[in-house]
Image (spheres, one colour):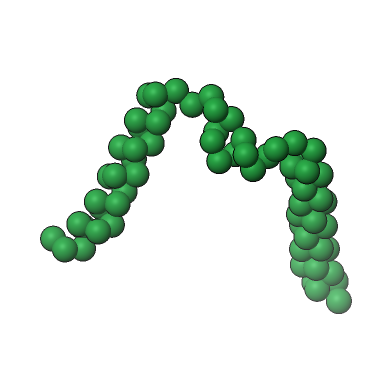
Length: 70
């Protein structure tokens, strides 16, 4: 019983913490336009960040698609 309890208590604590975090984030996201700011980056991304995002996306796609064909 003692061994089972030592495994079960941290698991239940983790699950309770994740549930509490979920409720907190939901309350914070309901207060403002979280999704509209999330998808456009808060409209604060500069040209350099956007260019590096495009380069990273292109290199990732080319490595996954072109790599196996070599």
